[in-house]
Image (cartoon, rainbow, N blue to C red; front, side, top):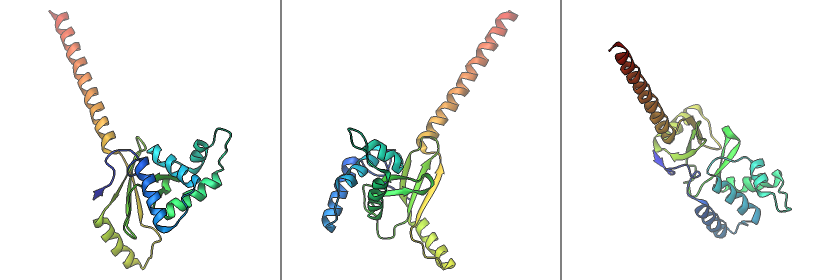
Length: 186
C-alpha cells in the first residue's frame, strides 16, 4: 500500500498545497476557479477532518455574508469532479486532496472511529483483485473508492499507553495493599 498522508492533516497535504494544485489544474484546463470554489476548498483543506456542506456553508457565512448550502454543493460538485476533494460517502462529507491520481485510480480511505481522522491510500494489490472481481461480475463501476473504518495507529498507540498506565497503576495499588497488609501483620 502506498500511503499519501502520514498524519491527520487532511487527506493529503496542507491548505497551500491544495490551493496551488487547484490553481494549476484550473489554469491548465481553462476552468474557472471562482472565489466560492477557492473558499470551499480552503475551508475543507484547513479542517483536516471531513466536513459536510452545511458545516462549510456555516464557516463561510459571516461578516454580513450568508453562503447557501446549495452554492456550497455546486462548488463541491466541481471540486469533486476534478479530484480536488473527495466525498466520504459514509460521512456524507468531504476531504481535500492535494495530489493527482491516475485515471481510474482506486482510493482507499482509512477512517478512524476514535479521532475522526482520515488517511488516503492507494493499493495496486486491492485494485488488481477488485478489477478481477468486477470483471467476473460483469460490472462497470462509476467510482472505485473503498472506505475502511477502524482505529488509526495514533489512537491505537494512545489506547495501548492508556492500558499500560492502567495496568501499572493497578500493580502499584496491589503493591501498596500488600505492603499495608505486611505492616499490619508485623
